[in-house]
Length: 294
Length: 294
Image 1 (cartoon, rainbow over the protein chains, first blue to last red):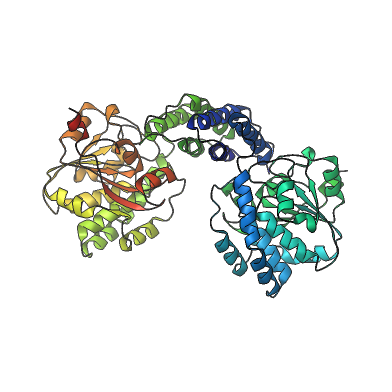
Image 2: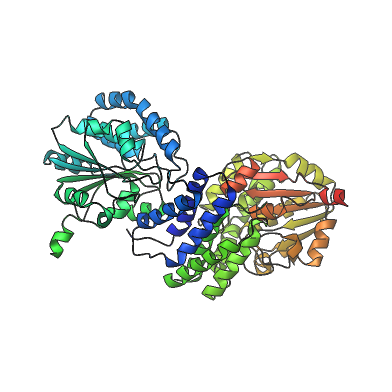
């Protein structure tokens, strides 16, 4: 997905939110906004929004001198989600289709996002709603079919807190067979995205091989990823891509991708044909474009 | 109310909305955003948001070559609201307290606003909801008491379409006594704010003396208003100020002002202690500050 002019006000809003997390000094907040303003005329629109977001968040880090303003929020969200672990496991075990329930909860976990929204609401209510509501785009049957044919899974994580829900989905997948699963985190802190420390703190390393994307972009921008990640991407039987950032960066890439996300902005919602706030499990439509182009 | 850093992303969003109303050329939209970006470092925060909004909308007009991008939207909203005229009159006449109902509808009419929101929703639903819902801030009893003691009313209008609701409130006021009423419109087009043409097209000139503020700011910035308007402001027994813009520009001015508005942004809502979307009839708390300072 390319960057839209509508993303520009949102970059400002996100920069202000991150600046406030990083510093209490309003003069610094103003300097951040002025610097984002100076970026605007140069910003290309033919790149994906996370590529620009990375620049914006780096700028916030440079000006505020704080490169991890969401450190405490991430730790709190990991703890909060872990406190629901037993409840979520029980809800899955007692449901009619445990894998479907785990998928829906993994989508719901994507609500925990500090970028496009400043306050994600009450996690308990989000979970309760997810358990009883249908997905707005529901490619679960294709996911289930493709999972059964797969061995190598590449799982592209998104946010702290959310990764507890990812761990639970991985545990559910392991009930099916002994998959080879790589769980991908960001190379360094950006927004509230999960890094290696987050993954270890919620125990994902006990159920999957955790690796860095090789980049601190808040998404999977393939050309910026490490050679190892690119190799894993191309050799995976199935790719689970969490979050709107990964949808934005991969929506025009080929691969057997399943996007698990909450739609968080009007542009992404319109492209997906859903409403803001809708929960989505969507199979990538471009399966072999790169191969066809060869 | 001063300008907050949170207003900056909103100015961008509003500029983009107005640019799209004025032109279909995305290159022009981009030029508008780049120009707003170049304004940011210079913007003072100790002025009210409508003072900056005026600059932003002038910039959109200059770049697009269209100084009235909301012309058709305004005409349509005037027509739409006029089509409800008989229904609204009947609803007021059959209500337990016709003046209260007319006040609530005048507040609800402030929903018709293209600035802080791009789509105001369905007017019929808004009216139905207003008829049965309480105001979130309800100083109606003080308004009623003050109206009974008043003769000279200054009525600061806001948007096209909304002015039909204002006409109806004025007609209801005229049931009480033969007030001297001045209805104020903007000097020239800005956003979807009502101008003299709008006021005449919905017949306000039949129930009040229509005058221009002397400025095309999207609010009543007293120092920018004509000497005549300033004189009317200071001599009025009561001032009815419609809309969030007038609240933003007058919230720190003295005067016997009653603000009739829908809260449309998080900052104004927080200052008012209400939620976004709430309907408000609020008496100004600063009654005599200027006099005290003398």
